[in-house]
Image (cartoon, rainbow, N blue to C red; front, top):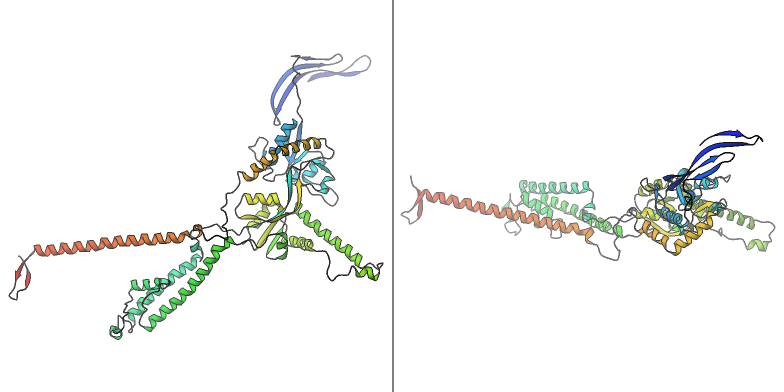
Length: 543
């Protein structure tokens, strides 16, 4: 634009300038095409000139709204490669709404990437502040409809079913392993058993070799007995191995010292086998045990598992308010029961041994504060994963959608119990915004056409980040091959070793036989047979 400031004879001022006019086409917040359509000569007698009189016959304008979001999968993901930089359930829904209403929108992350909390002075932060300050037109995400929020912004009709709070815990499920029978004992225990086996075998061989009362050193002493066994190193190894089986080790040593060694080994083997059997049974059934915690009441009644929501979350506000309500009820009851204006009869009707209203949430809120509230969802999930087991550690309380998503993308976490304190999710707009009624109509239409249900299936059941976890075993069924298959592999290994040794024995036997035949032939070729005076046949070397 180029022009000057002028003034006519009557003292009226005006601008005299020339401006080119163009039609600009936007797509997804970017300029797609610019077309010059005319010019404007402004001045005292300025006019507009078009290059084509019909150029504005198909001209339309598009409204662009500012949408503010909070990253919370699977509703909203930050994805740099996505067309708008975001993807997820809510982004797909917003695309459908924009197409139906004929507007475009740009997405920006909420201040602090949070829904927003209100301080004691009624001031908000996060997404709520962006909407209240009119920095955004639409709030998009898993936004819970809450009374204090409705005092400052407006909500559309709910686009998502009632969602409550749920509990996230570490699963008690142990992945099956065909070598589970080897994990019953720790590695150092297995090594110690093997070392004890070889030491005991060596002692049996040494005691039998050097004891004056052993069979090999004093065979005459045991002439009338049938069990005559010399404990060579091979026999000692075999005796110790078979002693650990129901078959038994066979004949024991004859001397008292050797029998004491054998008895000590038998006692050692009995304790090891009993311990192994008990632990194996526990290992095979631990994945089939049910959770001991199935509800908020179960959490409240135990002390081994600590629990808390994210600091500043809706769940935290819920427990904090429930605790405050219980405190207020207690004050009201105390004032009623101690009111001097009541007659004795009226006061007696309020007298009870115990406080009539539960203080459950007051105690729960105190436990949460003592255990420490995580500062973020990531920290809370990491704290759950750090738990030693499902019966000790940390449990996380949050929106059921967050809990189910964490269960969806991992195999070591599980949602426990039913939802409580359920509420809907809706879109948020500025208070008094005309967008509310327009959005309501489209959301209801999408629900009637089951479009939102298809989105839920896409981002929940068919989510690309969904983990394919093995199904836990049914407790009513027997032990599967997934847990005990390693025993059959052990049999196969034993049979394979036996076949290998048999082949070696066969080879050595025939080789030894061939050596003897060759030796006899050499003797026959170098000698001649003759008959002596006694009629005996002999061989004589031919010189």
